[in-house]
Image (tube, rainbow, N blue to C red; front, top):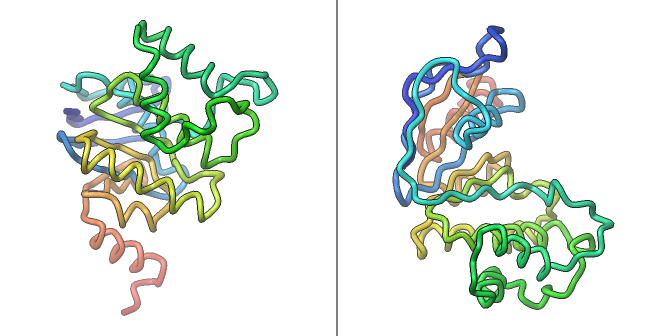
Length: 222
């Protein structure tokens, strides 16, 4: 689905922010990109999204349609008087989709159809994230890319949100790639983790990452 081969990236011939990244994402994967702040996670996702161009190396893909789910409606003023339904209907028009019933289907799929008449600015963090996912699903993606979906969401809402994402992956066959700072859900949900550290990256199992993480945080103690 996505293949990165010996990818390097720097801004204007500066120091490399990412070095020799080799990463393959296959159909049906649920991959969480983990690592400390400033390690290069966001840069990696921007490269995969095509927002940045590698300084060296090759990125290829075979997905049919990918959708990006941000943390919030970045281009929409929270005070702007627009409802959930209106936002999704605008997106339907952008995608040139004729079937208006798709809006209801996607909202119901995420359990937020009852919010259709609420103003976007009135939504909680968890509600907003579910609406964003519903919007992304309108394009029938085979790949969903998330940017730290639990940011700004309380613990209860996190517990409600992640089963929806897991269901999209396991039962609907959507490949999931997420930048993740929430170690609990990264380990619980992911088939694999991609650990970015110091501009380098490698795949590991959730258990291997936990062992690696504990080794660093506990100073190598048994």
